Length: 379
Ligand SMILES: *Cc1c(COP(=O)(O)O)cnc(C)c1O
Image (tube, protein in one colour):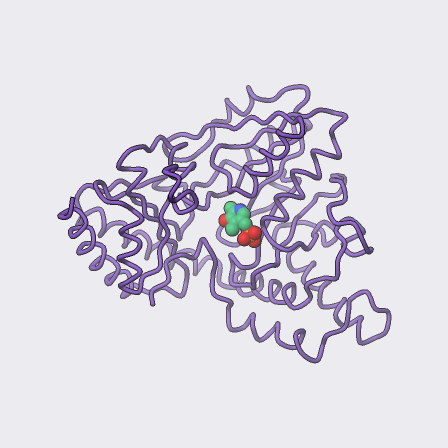
């Protein structure tokens, strides 16, 4: 099998699994316990808090463990909307956010909040001028993803942070795709809140974190015990958190080497596709893009059909319209980039990581060529 869907999830790193196992076995103490056995679990959780904090230049008490990216996004948006409802009810986000943000905004709209969705250009990047123009007296939150999951476009986060800070507005970023795939410094970038998810960087599913800058106070999201400073109750996912910490350590050790390796492989794949298959369009930016992301439209081909044929060849990919398949909708991200017709229908996303190899890329190009030819002949 060739796995090219690393934006959907990544395999747990063997080192991560090894780090997790004791906490699923003999080291089962509840971190809230006050005997030594339990305190070992608490110490393990707090060590991860420090590892994560230092990876983004935050303080340990600014890291809150959650069940993943979706929860972190929900908490950031709903938590700030509730906390600041006296100040205003206007939220600014983008048209290309993950559904964890978009659908939370839609929920808030039903509750009387007003949401501005910023446009993006053909590269998938927002306009800082439009952001500036959209700010109102009652704007309480700006939420812009660091990097997009479908087309990999990277937003000018530092500049967005400056604008938010200058206007005294809280700035949240969904960094689920970006974290550990590019450098993030929450202080330098003026980020007030940041979402991340372990299973997108070789950790286990169902575990993530929300960074909340000191002084920012979203409402309590999970009511219950005193965990996570009393604002996100529930017994900690100890094994998941320990695994996430190990995944962060492993990723940081090899970050620049891995980024280079993945980007070279992606560029090779793109080069061969563009030179050997006619009528293809690259979706998203050529440069301001995550190293492992490739999103290409094969004109005159149904992306969904191509995906199925590749699956029969043992290649896992994703089609841009997977989320709304059957509804005839097509990807909201590609639409925001200006794609329609064949370009919207023919999109295929391939997302690479370190486990992939150049030999795999050769096989993928070979299968793409044949399958695209077959599908075009049939129409
Ligand atoms: C995967 C993803 C999420 C959701 O994270 P989960 O941990 O799977 O809930 C949110 N935002 C982006 C950009 C993602 O890629």
